[in-house]
Image (cartoon, rainbow, N blue to C red; front, side, top):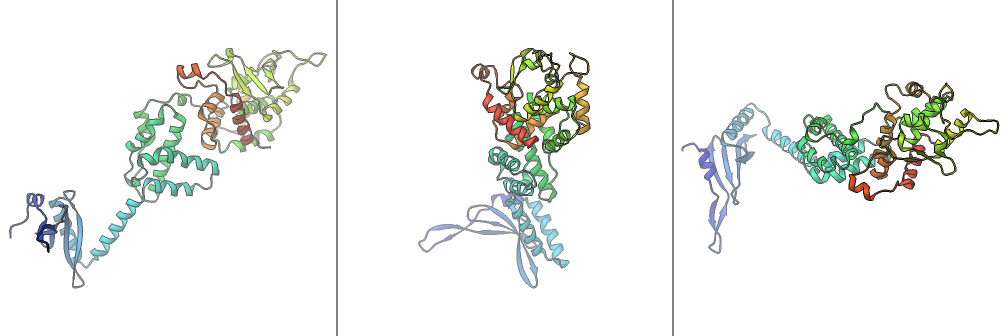
Length: 407
């Protein structure tokens, strides 16, 4: 019998039979390649490689894959290897079953399944933080590739999920990228997939840097923030520490704190209005003052120079420097910060605040950006949205104060 050729396999058709009513119907057809290797043509025309070997005196059929995914040349090579193992006494049937079980497990270990397992493994984190971590994946990643086996998820799939939010919600996109990467690393650590693609490098090349990410300052991890604030509060009181704590509680820039005057503070309304001249965006910024911030101001009153009537001037500095009438130096606040959180800077607390707001709260992104005095949306959006969202920002700042300085 001549050896079967690739063309013959390609053109192979199912067999036929005549049923009881005299109708012609397709049936499975088996073509022999040789040495126990056959190609099985099913009634629907699909073709599968089958190798017949002897085990314990019995004939056993082993599937070698589907044609044309597995070519004739590949099927012959696989058959030769399996026949050699069978002759050597190896349990090729057990090996095939184990391989099939592993393949089935790989198909069942989808990205969504692994993400939920990774979420369970994160139980040591705050419940709200962990819930938000999973919620981002559910909203953006699962619809895109949640049903894909985790071993097949690649960088291009991640980019496709990130692209819709990268420009409009850069902070969310950054958190989502980190969550996707964490799931893939979780799978890699358990040998469920190969090495993890460098998502940060891919997105850096695929997308321009979001405006919100252009400013980078070494910042305190928000999970460590309460412990650092507790340390600052336990240290002897100095003007530098008071100014630093006030900066943290209000999420402003350190220069805005150093130049703050009592005339800008409305204690009755619990508000601090920073004039446009001192703001980066050159517009007034009203900061809602929490109980924690007001407590700092009560302590700062003791530093104020007053006249014989016990009154001061509106332009008196809230946190004066060593020289009368001069603001404290930036180094004074930096020194107090460095002792409590080495390796980071006071300005980094704005990033800490923003990370906390994104990771651990459900406050809207626009409110969080407004709290930092960032511009929101494009020029058209801003022309219609002229409010300050003060009440919403007050609720946000109260939550922040409760987080970093619980009473």
